[in-house]
Image 1 (cartoon, helix red, strand yellow):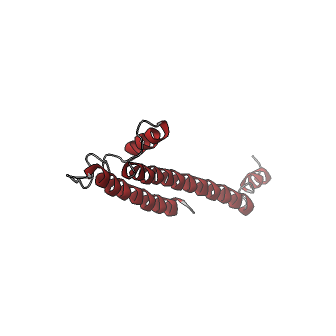
Image 2 (tube, rainbow, N blue to C red):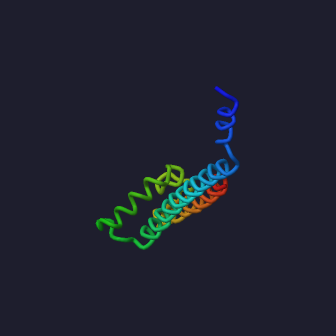
Image 3 (spheres, rainbow, N blue to C red):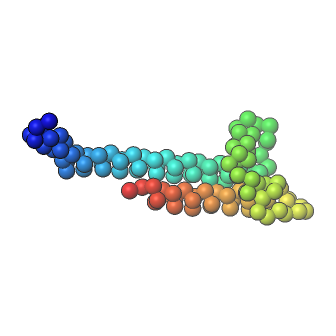
Length: 123
């Protein structure tokens, strides 16, 4: 391989090409950060709406109510569960108190963790 051919191969890594690659990486990181934030917001919304449905004693036979409650049960990670969460109330209206406190804390936790992850991932 001649010297001129070697120089042409080295010229392929120009500053413009590197800048374009960095721009693509920044765009991908931004999109991933947006997706992570969106997932966390949807999980927080499921927990918050589920807690409100329990508090308002919504008809659990309704398909939409059942969908939200099942979704909230799925994203509570067992830590923020209504039945065995951070705090368990007993007595009158215990189910409502458990849902409001545990799922409310879960919603706040998803928003905090989502925002932190968004800031870490975003360039």
